[in-house]
Image 1 (tube, protein in one colour):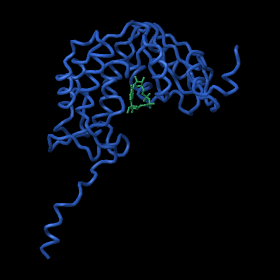
Image 2 (image 1 turned 45 degrees about the horizontal axis):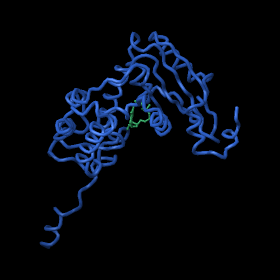
Image 3 (image 1 turned 60 degrees about the vertical axis):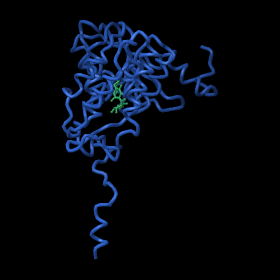
Image 4 (image 1 turned 30 degrees about the horizontal axis):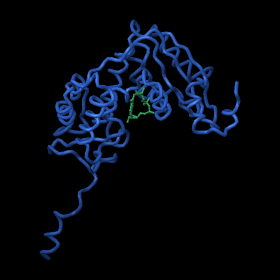
Length: 268
Ligand code: N1C
């Protein structure tokens, strides 16, 4: 009889939420990436205080309800990681994560959000805390659709994407995926946050590259109505728009991975 009573507090921790829990060693990864970026990759930022940045990141979500995260929570972190990128160097992307980053990896003068300090630190990580504890929750974190929208990672990406777009200037580029149905998606971070936060006085033009997977379907191209939706939103905001299918420099990157495909062997 007594054994049953003693057993109950030892039940394994239950998963409170439906999303992946905080990435193991989160704070160490954040610190390590901050030092790598500021001391090795971009020494012009070596004066940044990674200790403070790490603390501000943790304080943004620890001891807080993970369904009530806000832009405000990240303000100090944003202030500490502020960074200017030159005009004509910003690259946005939507559903083309890998390809866009392969492109800026070769074009070291261009920046996706993940090529800036804040995006570099957070890329691919998960994190959340709990109102009743000062610890990170490594078991589970709220899932955007299944639990709540205002969770620490979703609010973070919306907040930093907004800042990235506000800071963009000159001709900016976006890499879109023409091999899926939602080549332009008004509910994506790009469609919902970034295009609405470009400053018309600063951004002269958005150049879209609609890329098709090698051997993949051509769901949409620059002449598709869905691309016109994007053009229309921008025209209302006084930002001009140009579009090109399968931009050759990016197509070459796809061809590096698929050297034997017929579309990669032509010399024209
Ligand atoms: O929703 P998306 O694409 O349109 O978001 C991409 C868009 C880019 O231009 C970035 O500047 O928004 C920015 N951004 C990121 O940089 C980023 N890194 C990692 C938005 N989201 C980012 N993530 C994660 O990928 C995040 O968890 C978010 O929900 C996805 C969005 O990917 P998507 O739908 O392909």
